[in-house]
Length: 194
Ligand code: 5GP
Ligand code: MG
Image (tube, rainbow, N blue to C red):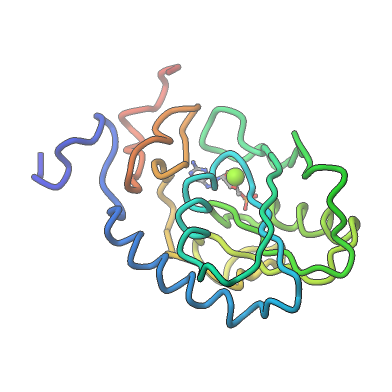
């Protein structure tokens, strides 16, 4: 086993370290006030569950004078496997008393893949009155290739076809707590119900 893979559960290969993530997040946090002036009354909307660690680390890096609200919603398209069901479900909306009219949303998700989830959420938040939506993702799969027309305003890292876990992202509920990002080694998980 290569030295850098030590410490990861079996069946995972290291992909992006916590140190690399932190460096990238500092640059992303500096870009946010430039993209969304505070007069636009920004509200960060975090897509649970996958984006919880990313959002916590990113938002803490914003200047303390930058006024931004934070809300959460919960969405699911994957169930317990590594293939999208192709159908997005809103399991929990942001609090009903939040008035999005005239506001700019910083929509924070873990990964932009087919774009189905973020297209669904963008439409939903516009129906709730959001004036402008800026999409911010930690990972972007095969940038330039998704059919849904969603282009992230801010993206941390490109990824290819690997199924990614760690740093908030799960496989069947597992591995969210890992501090860095890892790729699932497919043959190590195929066929077995975990
Ligand atoms: P999309 O709707 O863009 O196809 O998929 C986005 C959602 O699928 C993400 O919010 C994430 O929950 C899930 N997803 C896509 N690729 C991966 C992956 O490699 N690992 C994990 N854990 N989730 C993924
Ligand atoms: Mg997700």
